[in-house]
Length: 75
Picture 1: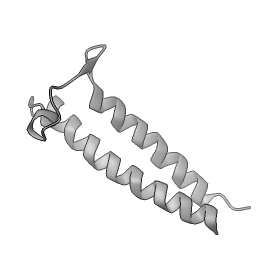
Picture 2: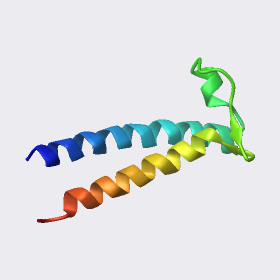
Picture 3: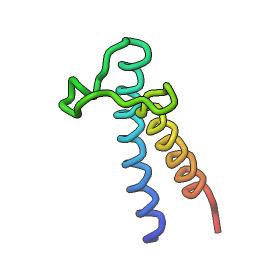
């Protein structure tokens, strides 16, 4: 039971991360506006010409998928 609660908490955190990094990725890639600077986070950062928020989006997506798989796994 504790494992399921932990996975649900991680799932909620990953959804929040997906929404936040998705918003930042959208504003920087499609709207050509640095959403991080408007949120008071400083300047936008690029890693290998890709915005850092895109890496965060994929990281949170991986955590989300792994958590879903953990919740669906039956012992």
